[in-house]
Amino acid sequence: MQLDEAQRQVAAHFDALKIELRKGRGTFVARFFGRSISTPKGLYVWGMVGRGKTMLMDKFFESAPDLPKRRIHFHAFMQEVHAARTAHKSDDVIAEIADGVAARAKLLCLDEMQVADIADAMILGRLFEALWARGVVIVTTSNQPPDELYKDGLNRQLFLPFIARLKEALDIVHLGDGRDYRLGRMTEDKTYLTPLGPKADAAMDEIWGKLTDGEAGQRIKLTLLGRKLVVPQAAHSCARFNVHDLTDQPLGAADFLAIAQNFNTVFVEQVQIFKAAERNQTKRFILMIDTLYDAGCKLVISAEAAPEALCVSGPHKAEFLRTASRLREMQSQSWWLKGATQ
Image: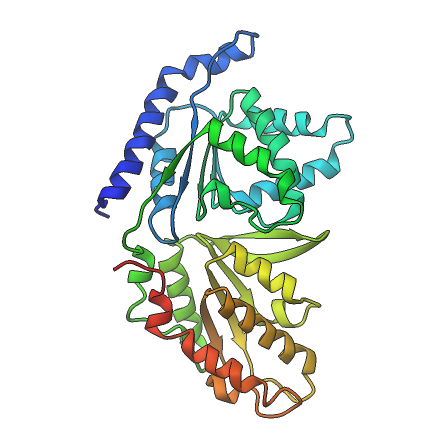
């Protein structure tokens, strides 16, 4: 892929960091012997979805010096951190977790940093400080600038010192406006796939591959008000669900909002015509579409029938007319190109 000017500028920052890491390879060993060694500043690369942040970070990671390094999705990393907090019983759990992370990686690349959960917000400051103290260089990508992390979150004022510290410890680099390359791949694709069957399944897989650069994705959990919301597949700001994952569970508006806040594109598979008796499932589907619509999310869906035929009986029949209209709008090219610079 040929880089545009903004991407070349970001690539130059990555190249400069590689030089610093090569200079300092020996300093990581020296740190263990108690010598005070300065660690290169990491990078925080932010910009809109589809601008190539992950691609640039992955190229940097692959070509980074031969030192202990790790690349992981931010949510998967925080999932590991919360699991470790439960497992460790010491008085300073954060120090133990940081020791474990630093033992595995002196370069830690976190893809798609997004803070929408209070449990993550409350631990990040202490954890990052502990990692920096151990000489870990952190590189992360995000769709948001630091000042918008955990925006409107509960007790956000407690998170603000971490934002200030993040801006001191990392070089903040904006991958500026330009073409959304992934959306450019979608101009000829249908994103509402019907009827169900092998052809729709294959089309779903193909679109997933286009929007995730071929990544299969990984299972992650979002922590929400003390509960875990499972995302079966997550990659490159995309989340993929079977419809039963969303409609057969006791999920509500907060759950669907968490999905919308953490992912730009949502894939929902195997939507079947709702039976009159499936009142709760139908209502959850309506609420999910309303939430994704209001958030401006992109939607890829496979369904048994056209939107207008998905609910033709039962107590939500009339209400579903608006849902059908929104499903139509969300598959339009204008919806997919919204917010993208051509």
